[in-house]
Amino acid sequence: MICLSEQIKEQHDGINPTVFMGSEVPFPFEREKSAMRVNGIAEAVSDCLPLLEEWSIPSRLASLQGYSGVYQGYITDLARDWLNALSEEERQQVEIYSCGPTPMLKAVAALAKEFDLPCQVSLEEYMACAVGGCAGCVVKVTTDEGEAMKRVCVDGPVFDAHTVFA
Picture 1 (tube, rainbow, N blue to C red):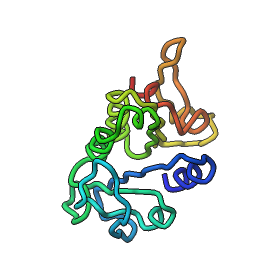
Picture 2 (picture 1 turned 180 degrees about the vertical axis):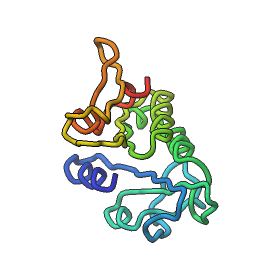
Picture 3 (picture 1 turned 120 degrees about the horizontal axis):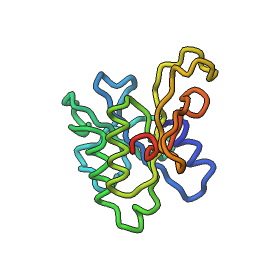
């Protein structure tokens, strides 16, 4: 998500990504208090990813571990608070990108559907050969022609969330 945020900011003038990250283990980086305000997010939720802060990309962190400065809840709850604070016009400009474990991706897809937003997910599947030969990483997706099996290693790993979690 860090590289994607950087690429969006650099290549798409006027588009400013906002990043929400969650963790159920200690964060694998130093946290710091953000100087940037994020609409809909309480001021007490101020911890961010320092690298994104340097790039002027707002970020907030979520966890159930009780860390000070971090949103106490699921990442989807943090995102819902933010989405609810946006105007309808602002929400129409939002697209969600997500990576992480499948249960979280399902919850993110449901949130995107709730707000009628486009959503792309990067799936994490076991890839035995990683070249599409073994079909060990297939997932069921919904296409215009009906259900199909797609290989995460070749056809993905990024998919439209609404086709994977229909």
